Each structure stands twice: as C-alpha cells, then as structure tokens.
Amino acid sequence: MSQATHDLDHRSRAWYVDKVVQVLVFAGGISAIVFILGIFFFIFREGLGFLLGPFEFREVFGSIAWRPTSREPTYGALALIAGTVSVTGLAMLVSVPFSLGAAIFIGEFATGKTRETLKILIELLAAVPSVVWGFIGLSIMNPLIIRTFDVPVGLGVLNSGFILGLMAAPIMTTIAEDALKAVPNGYREAAEAMGATKWQVIWKVVLPAGKNGLMAAVLLGVGRGFGETMAVLMATGHAINIPTSVFDSVVAITATIAAELGESAVGSDHYQALFTLGILLFLMTFVINLAADLAVRGVRRKS
Amino acid sequence: MRFQATALNQRNRRIQQAVRTLFGLMTLLLIVPVVIILAVLVYNWAPAISLEFLTAAPVDQGRAGGIFPAILGTVWLVAVALLASVPLGVAAAVYLSEYAPENWFTRLINLAIINLAGVPSIVHALFGVGAFVVFAGMGKSILAAGLTLAIMTLPVVIVATKEALQAVPQAFRVACWNMGATRWQTVSKVVLPNSISGILTGVILVVSRAAGETAPIMFTGAVAFLPFLPQSVMDPTMAMAYHLFYISTAATGVPDEIRYGTALVLITMVLLMNAASIAFRAHLRGKKKW
Image (cartoon, each protein chain N blue to C red):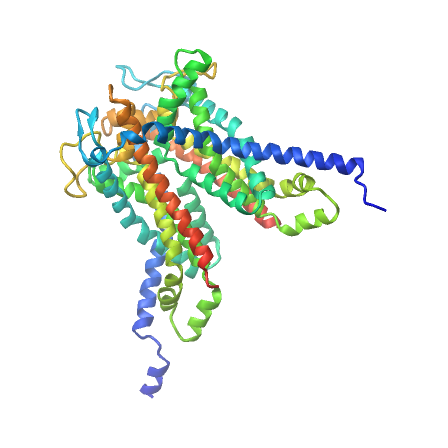
C-alpha cells in the first residue's frame, strides 16, 4: 500500500527544483512591472513636496520665468515645454518622411544584399550614443550653421532638431519596416495578380493595411524625441526662450533636469521641482507608448 | 501579335521608377550624412589616439594626458549593469517564453517592458537618484550607477533573450517532456543550451548600450575627476560618456585632439560592440541546424 502511493508520488528532488525555479522565473517575469511602479513611486516620492507646496498650475504652465535659484523662486516651465516641442517638432518634420520613405524602400523595393546592408547600416546608426550626437552638434554642426547662415550662434532649434531627427530616424525606420513586414504577403500577391505595379501595390494595399503600425513608429519617434537628453542639452544652446526662429537657442525639459539636478540640494524646492518635471516627462512618454501599443494591437487584430 | 505596352502601362512604370528612385535617395540621405561625419572624424582625428592616450591618466582637468580612468570606469559600470540585468532579464524571458499563460497578466508584463524601454534616460537617472543614491543610501557610487543602467537595459535583455528562446523549435521541448522531464529540466538541458548564442548576441548589444549612456550615470555615480582609481563598487568613478560630456561642455581650454580623440574612442567602442553583435547574429543564422 505504502509502496503504491510512493510510486504515484512524483515529488522527487527534480519536482521540487522545478517548483522553486518556477517561483524564481516568475519573480523575474514581474520585474518589469515592479520597476515601472518603482520609477513611478520614487519620482513621485521625491517630487511630491513640490506638487503639494509651491506648485501652481498657472505659474508652471503659463509663465516662462524658470528661476528656481533666485531669492523669490518662480517655476514657469512654459519655455521648457516650448523648447522640447519645437525641437521635437522640427526633428519629426525632417525625419518622419525620410524614415517612412526609407522603410518602404528597404521593406518593399530593395532585395538581397542591398537590403541586408541597408538594414545593418540603419541598425548601426541607431547605436551611436546620444552624447556623441551632442558632441557632433556642438563641434561640427555649430560652426557649420554659423558659417552657412551667417548667424552669431549655431546652437538652437535648427541644430538640435537636425541632430534629433538623425537620431530618431533609424528607430522609426526599423519599426516602420517591421509594420510593413506584418502585412500578409497574400495581400501583395492578390494585388499583383490583378496586374498592379509594385508602387500601386504599396500605395493602395500595403500602406493602408500597415498604417496603424506606421503610426506607432511615428509615435515612438516622438516619444524618443521628448525623452532625449544629452544631445538636446548640448545642441540647443540651453537658453530660456520661446523660439521665434529656427536659429533661436532654447531649453528642453530633459536638458533642464540634466543641467540643474547636480546643483540642487537634495530635498530642496528646486530639487523637488526637477522631479516634478520628471513626472511630467514620465507621464508623457507613458501615454505615447500606450497609444503606440494600442495602434499596433489594432493591426494584429485585423490581420 | 507582339505584346505592346499601352500608354497607361508606360505611365505606371515611369511612376514606379520615379518613386523607387525617390525612396532610395531618401534612404541614402539618412545614412550618408552620418557616414560622412564619422569618416571625417576618423580621418582627421585617428592620429590623436595613441597608446599613451589610452593608458595615461588625465592631467589638469582633462586638458592633457589620457583617458585610462574613464575607460576603466566604463568597464566597471558595464560589468555591474550586466551582473544585475542579465540574470534578471533571462529569468523574465524564460518566464514569458516557457511558463507564462496567455492572459491579461502576461499582456500587462509585456506592456510594462515596452514602457520601461520607452522611459527617457533622464527619468531613469531621477529614479536612480531617488531609489539608490538617496533611499538605499548607496551615495554616488559605481553600484548605484550600474544598477540604474541595469534597469534601463533590462528590456533589451528580455526582448533579445525571448527571441532566442522562441527560435528553439517546439518539437525539442515536446520530445523532452515525453521523456518525463520537468519543465525546468527541459529549459535547462534543452532550451537554454540551444539558445545560448542568441542570448549572447543580446548581451553584447547591452554592453554597447550601457557603455554609451550618459544621463543615467551623471548623478548616480559618474564624476568629472577622481584622483584615484575606484577600489570598490561603493566608489564613484569616471566614465567615457560622461568624460566626453564634461570636456566638451563644462571644461574650458581642452585641446581639440583630446576632445575628438575621446569622442572617437567612445564611438569605436560602441560601434565595434554593435558590429560584433550583428556579425555574430548573421553567423548564427547561417549555422542553424533546424
């Protein structure tokens, strides 16, 4: 009797190891959720004092006076927001058409070796560190803009927008190309069988079918632009200013945090205000990522 | 009767040719400026890099001397980041690929990974300051900066590992289960050995990413100058990316050879790592047995 139950009892050492490992990998599995919540918790924890204290909605979003270190500090973040929006806007203006064009060329026109080579080059471009892009903006683009356009300062919306465009383009290209790849080949074949040229297939079939994925690619590019720090810090000129021309120096939200966190005392209003900017950034990118995810899911459900 | 292209056929073909050329040019315009910039950097400033530049300590706030402590610091930071993010990321990928049921919770995990990958680097820095430097009391140290980098690179490890695990055919697992093996025996004896090189590709990618990051380390562990080399993970350190930022913005009168030389060494480190990862991946794809 006891022999029989023992035979059916498969709880050997391996069984226990399996159970322990299952718990361990589950802990790893939820780590991403833990960290997202952790980031949320810790930046709120450090920024809460400002949100409950000196924070005034009308001042932060309605004034350009960002003077956290003056005797009567004011925290108008309008110039910061305007800087981030203008730089990202210019970057997208340049890089969205080029990225989508490149994605279509690589995904639909190019074949064989050409295609592989282009993909590898794009991947390598995406790997250039942002501080190197900032360095390029500072040391190469800056004198180039001064000479070409005969302006006193070459650091500003134009410089950082261009740099940011070059940075965001490889990522957008890769994601957009994935979106085109997700369009089933049967769609293309059906259209080609009707006698459509390659371009007609792309224009009438592939692009409409993949448009959600392409939108996600653009959204992720915008998210990347909002969040970029070092390149924007080094190439915008870092001057508080609502830009009226592309040559104006501006200041970005991310760059302000990077430039000022080191000088602010832990726990001071200034320090907490910078964390509040971090909350703003975190929420903005959170919304963008969610929207992109929803867009991609829309494609999957249909096909 | 011979086939004759109609006017409409010819027009369509012309449009197609024009579009193809236009998009091809757009692709080139994305790539060529960057390649030119990098080529000019290499051509003009490669002579600035000497053995002495790589092995000497900086002198006079970086205005002379070499960059050895910064290179060493980057190695420290990347090592700490890898030690933390690789085990965790591989565990997460094993869970998602081998254990997770298809339900809302798994979708939530995937959404969290996507979001973690999209969090701006400066927000990671704020988290590092709040959680590691202040709350955990690590101070500005290699440990705090390395852990911040680890969390930032975690999504890369997870995604790359998951892809490698899913490339192992389902039949391998089924065969193993049929022998009476537990899930973990299947994973450890069959799935992981068959995907280890794919995981390695992801790890190399993480090294290159972590080595190039500046924002997450600038408040958590990187300092502009240190009179000694770091002795333990509780010391702050110099780092390549932060050093480049410092000598090209805050410091004045740094000679061009040193600024460009530092930039070139950093680019070379990062791009070589990336190229190695890509080559490794291509090699694996060619070698696949199934």
